[in-house]
Length: 260
Image (cartoon, rainbow, N blue to C red; front, side, top):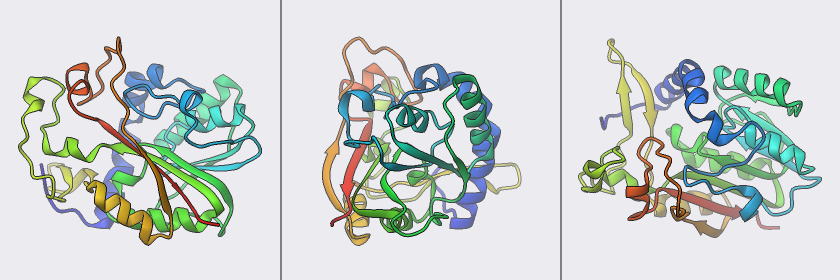
């Protein structure tokens, strides 16, 4: 449902949600995402193929909202020095387990993306594949924090649900093809528990909102990638499906840089 949720409720609800859902999420999606791989989105776009981050060898990379940190482990195999940050201890537990299985270990940090616990200019690159950005009330603060910890010339690449998807019901079938919600309604999607408190919160921003957040943080948008649904890809993931993917974009990937 579309409801209101404060910044504190968003943090509290999503930390609890991902802690509780971590096992089920990994059981359902872990095989697709891999243990040492960088998949940007349900369309299956891989960093190994598109290189949106540019050269990573020898670069310090911050993964913001890294979940089980499979992307950071892949970056480590490419010569990068990654750090995986996530709000959820449950997801970071899976990151530690996967590191033990794969033998690829990266530093793990539990923290809120709106308050990154790193010094100014600590990283060459920052990235996230559907982490953090849509789950905080003040995503502009995430942009400012990422800009702060990036060195001049650093790149910030993040993937979110494409904003156009918010006007449709969250359904991968024909029922999800009829627009029902105003694109400019920025009320978050909220699930609540028996006590009326939010248990899951996801925030909507338009494409224009995202551009303005980046510019206000002192960053430059250099590319906006809208992955097309690949031929032969039959896997459904939540609202993502071949039916919907053939008609409208499901993912937006923003490629930005810090001037200098």
